[in-house]
Image 1 (cartoon, rainbow, N blue to C red):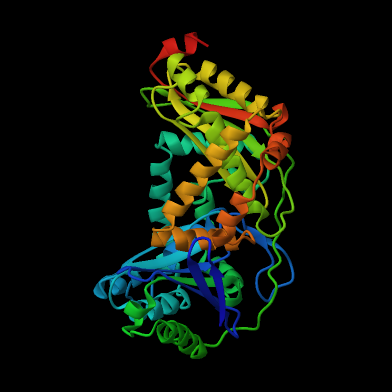
Image 2: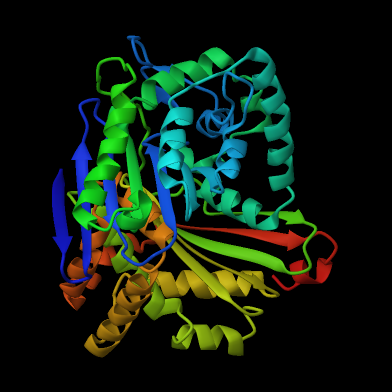
Length: 447
């Protein structure tokens, strides 16, 4: 067992890589009544083309299959449902699929050891039938059609389709109505056997070890948690560890389409401007640090306290809140700025201009320090959330980053580091997407 301390944020991490390759991480949070546990595989919607375990040729699987597989994992051979078994233990369970990860989790304040064993057991017991796959196709089809009615989902998807020509971010995590109909139980098993090997997975447990194990000695309690996981895994047989061969079509900073729009049943137009971040090779912690640096820059440019935000309100370019986000998956990424607006064209023009102005960053030293402190403050506050710790740790470890090293790295940032971001803000990297109200012609006449 390895121990790593982070004195700057008063955190400690215990980790061990088991013989089967599973990485187990325990993060003690003394005094917390609740425990949060996540069992995750480095497999998400990005990974549609790969060489299945035991095969020799690349296979392209239907869009949405990682998400489909997540849904099916809760079915057990005896006809029971893992969600109900967790509920019987007094534990809340859930699952989520992102573009590069699938997580299975539970939280609660009792029966944690039973919960850990159940979490490991149900995720490591694949069970698919033709009948259950067909039933799930109908459920997910309804889910996808429901999302098609959500303006915010359409805005996001429209912007991604503008931005990327090949990279899977242009597709919804759930796939399409057509693609999920192609999924078979054999496909699910091939994906499972490839990506759900313990060597491609992580178990993160965040909580008070003494309460989890009902032992007063913290060190013995931590060792007890690892012992529970070791015993669980020792009872199971797994195929030998192999490297997973994946094929991803990465892209440069040039967007696929400059602009696009659609009409929906909305009262106010929704507009988004995006900056495409190109494929880059990141060293350790670089993907995480880029995300944090861009966050500092965006807070200074579009944050609630910025002059640009106030100016957009004064010019009535936004009806209230302005939203912005940074996504870096360790390969590619994007920046998104969006809002509800009665003047979509003017809003887009304004945001585009402000983003292009960042090709020459004129932030003062005082502004930089202020916004850096704000980012650090929000991060430190988030460390009181068990689910934030677990999710963030997993999200960043897959990007070869350590979330607990973020504070020290951000503390060392200088204004010169922020100015190095200027290279991303080019005309050919910008795109926009707008959703207009169906029944308001006057909004189109103003553009």
